[in-house]
Image (cartoon, rainbow, N blue to C red; front, top):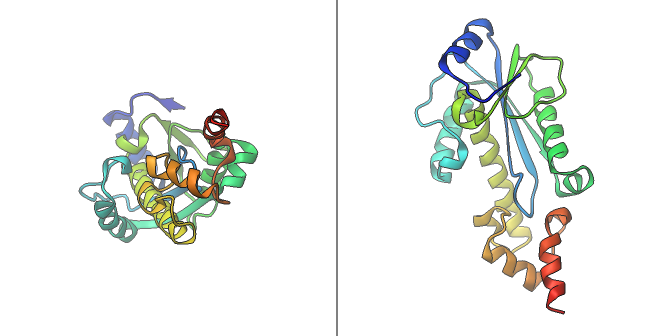
Length: 207
């Protein structure tokens, strides 16, 4: 079931009914390059880390601090990945859902319920699909932060393999520096062909 409003009453019912609550979120749907990264995390039920919220609202410095606190309070953590080839093969949404399921399936502890940010995955576990879950549900916020830090680390490493695109700061998103890198150096193996169509069309218009 999907809730457009995840209120305190629903949250109270979930936390009173279930013991092992997994939060799942994804990072990296929009970039031109790099993978989608997902995270599934089961937090201690009494965990309350100050500052945990949607990763999009946090600086990298703050997320690195929160990451360590989240890992210290986590009962289980797992990641899923979908690279650019997979994204081009099956589309971004299906690749994301598959990566979410991979993260869930590889948790060392089987959760009692899964809380997901506005998506539904193929699982026999009870699941609650929450609009803006990365902002409104603690477990999903924790997953969001862990996924974001992991993906940023991957893109920083890619910036050393493929310099000139600004991956260390834009993390694969379509910034001016990234487009300039594409114009000067061409594509890399981590670029998503399905996301570069408009860029190619623009290039052809100048021929």
